[in-house]
Structure formats: C-alpha cells, structure tokens
Image (tube, rainbow, N blue to C red; front, side, top):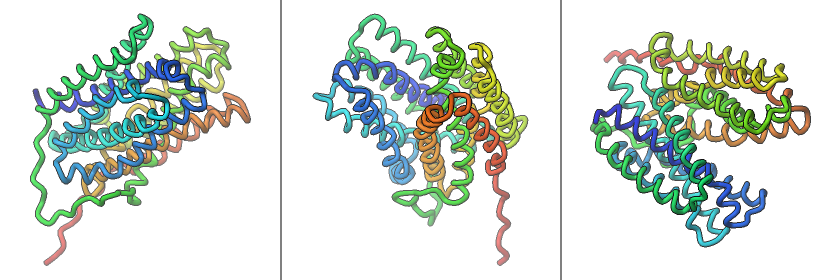
Length: 382
C-alpha cells in the first residue's frame, strides 16, 4: 500500500467512525431516557474533550513520532465508538463523550499533520481529496447506521461490529503510513500546550469562516427548507444530502483545482460561489431553489478548512503544532455556528439568520491571502 493510499484510508476510517456514531444518538437518548437538555449537555462534552486534547497533539507526535501517533490515536478513536453505548448509566455518558472528543480531536490533528508532511514530500496538493474521503466514509457509514436502526439492530451490536471492522482497516492503513523523518539537530520540541501564533490565527480565521458556513448549513439546511419553503420531510432530508454530496465531491476534485489555480485563488473563488448560494437560500422560497443554494455553499466552502490545515502545517514550528492551532479554531467555529444561526433565526427570521453566512463566506475570500506560502528566508550573511 502506498503512503498516499494509507493516509487516505485513515481519513475514510475517521469519517466512518463519526458517521456511525451520529446515527445512533437517538438510540442513546431512548436507552438512557435522556431529556433534550441532558442530551445536549452530553453531546457538548465531545467538543470540550477535543479542545482539551488537540493543543497537546503536536507534543505527542514529537515524542513518539507522527506515524506511531497516528496509528495509536486512530485505533483509539475506532475503539471508543463503543464507549457511549456500553456506559452503565447516564452519568457515565459525560466521561464517555469527553474521551471520544479527545480521541477524535487528537487523531484529527496528527493525521492532518501527517498528510501535510506527505503532501510536502509529494510536491502536490492531496489534503482536499483526503477530506473528501473523510466525507465519503462518514456518509457511507451513516447510511449503514440508518439501515441498522431501521432494521432494529441494537446499537451495541452495530457499533461493536463497526469498531472491529474499522480497527482492522486502521491497522492495515497504519502499516503503510509514511515513516518519520529524523528530527533536525537542536530542533525544539513543540510546546506542551500550543496556542495559535499570530500567523496561525490568521490562517485559522479562513478555516473558521469556511467551517462556520459548513456547520450552519449541515445543521440547519433541513430545518430551513421545512420552515421557509414548507418542504416535506423527505425533501428536507434530500436538501441536507445534496449539500453534503456537493461538498464531498468538490473535495475529491479539489486537489486538481488547487494544483491549477492555487490555494488563495480557489478559496477566493469559493467565497464568491458560496455567497451566490447564500443569496439563493435567503431569496428562495421553494425547496429546489434553496437546495441549489446549499449545493453552491457546499462547493464554495469545501476546501477552505483542508487548505487552512495545509497552510498551518507549513507555517508552524512543526506540522503538528500548526495544524493543532487551526484545528482548535475550526472546532470552535463548528461548535458555535449552529447556536448563532439558531439564535438569530429565533430573534429575527431564518432568511435573516442565513444572510449572516453570506457575510462570513465573503470574509473568507477576503482573508484567503493568509494561505499564501511565506517567502523563503534569505540566509544570514556570515
């Protein structure tokens, strides 16, 4: 297995774990008799766990090697998918989701850092396609999860099978990962708890904007067309699926586009495309006009976060530290976006709330210059 195929399988596996778990959240709520408020608090523990774990991921990769860290953390992520469904009681769910978040976040950081190193070795963009495969893995596993729930298969049995299968795939993928390069003499270790530098923060803002539009659309697309366009449940679900499919498809093709037009140009054009999509969503009053708008948003923001990870990996003192900084920022965006849109829709209206997305994606295009590689430093005269 080539290094590229190995890391691609890691990304698909990571997405499959996330997609599998998301489909069994209703089972968790029923099994543990959780109120909506309690379920919300339980689910909030996952991003909290990620925030705690992600800034330390670069240090871990430095200590044990990026290849080994990726293998261990993706395996842990596969196994911990079982933690919530085997919890002895509701109180244990908080700890289970904290552990899940830490495993998800740290594995996310190290696998993206590994991808940046491989991308540099290959001399071409690969990270957009890898994120496309993450989306494919998530969609495929989510579809199987929906089928399992429809057939009445117990979530513990379903996720146990998923854990075994994906652990096997991650083990196979781990053997083909790129070997670590020897550390340069005198190279400082990443900080124990790395907060973003000014340069990383500027790159992170680009990822923040793209992830904000992505998170808001993914969480609210179905609700939006139901409330604004009076869509039937099937059409509402189809709108979400259209958004996800167009975003995944764009990511799969993204590396070729980036290779031709460059990261800055692609993100700037993506901001315009996503803004046009936002206008269709806000102005449209039929399901299919809104669905077309969400498709354009998906196309426009698809590669912004992956390209931000790649730029941060090149800019930080180490790939792991740079990616950790940007990942922390994008996780924050995905956490607050649904709440911001929901609050704005409650106070104003759904179209007014989604007008905010137009502003955000245009800002993404304006800030895209932060993704431009820094010029090589001239050697100091002796």
